[in-house]
Length: 235
Image 1: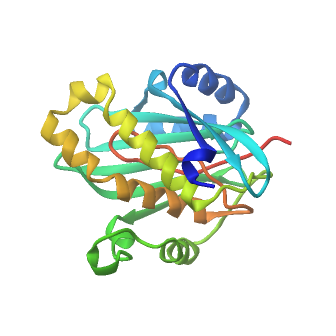
Image 2 (image 1 turned 135 degrees about the vertical axis):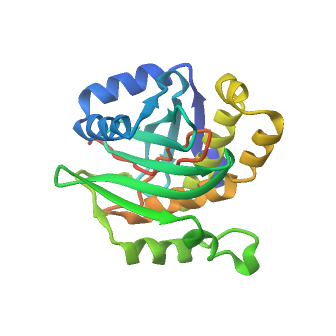
Image 3 (image 1 turned 45 degrees about the vertical axis):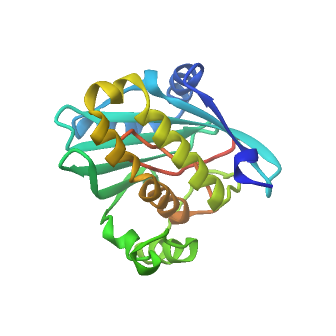
């Protein structure tokens, strides 16, 4: 079964309402929302992307929201991902020359405390064979495990790596095509940013593999490429 068959993009029509609802119920989401705001990033809930992901392993579907955050000077961008069970994670990316993702920071909750891990993107791209193609799942998993696992605070639905890649790519490119992105970037910059789709998926996988307790997923991708994975199930 192809990943496209198990990841349904529901767009923004219900994204805002879902995000507001789960934010009210999730301590993790509110905490990370506050962390991103403290960094000077402004939430853009009206751009929230909503997905339904079916897990072939768990035989369950789960809704996942992806909410971008934007800085005024566009040197940092963020994304907050929250799933219907309340599990949340976030990523902040450093942007160089308006179009280059130079570094990323993963933010998660462990025992009620925010855990941060910051990395140059070269740590991921070194896993690409000959500098081309994409870094393998195995390479990204090893990198994430060296950094250290973050135990999940609740039961997580099993999500596959290929689903993360699909969700990240769709989120990222959809946000790049919306009115906000078109108002901030010219066509050449949009084209340059689209070239980072592969990197966005790799960041998503890094976060996926850092989460202990499940191959969990939900990709937070702002139009500049922040990507985080978190997927929980309130069962």
